[in-house]
Image 1 (tube, one colour):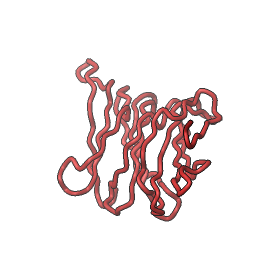
Image 2: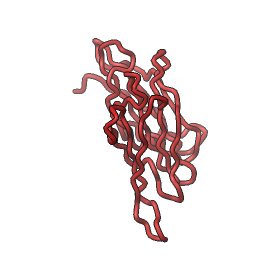
Image 3: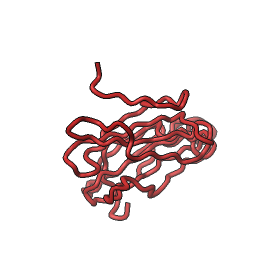
Image 4: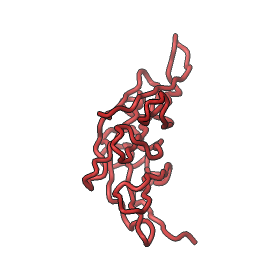
Length: 178
């Protein structure tokens, strides 16, 4: 039997489609997680939802301490989640979330910065794809340019070039401003 479970209440939301470690977002010495329900609907069909759970000496908390919806029908927020990443070099773990259905299937990668004031995350920027490429389908993080600041890459597998579906990968450099 598992030591902990959390069940969603939104029918067909597909809670747990993506789960990622966040590191220790509240600096209490325990690891935390983020989970997604990309087909979550709450006033907007399949808008998606992400939620953070804090770890403690007893394990993961009974309820999420932070949730986020972007209130855009079909966005499927949380289809992909990054591992812990520090995009602004402030030593706090940030989060990149894919929403491949964003803006009529253009897709997006949304950056949430850890605010370090127990509000957990604030949306910093949204990188939107072009055409119907479904940007944000996958997320990868790392220091891709050697400047000691984390960056991220995201995929748009339906990107078109010269009328052909070729796909593309987009890279965004981290910076001291996020």
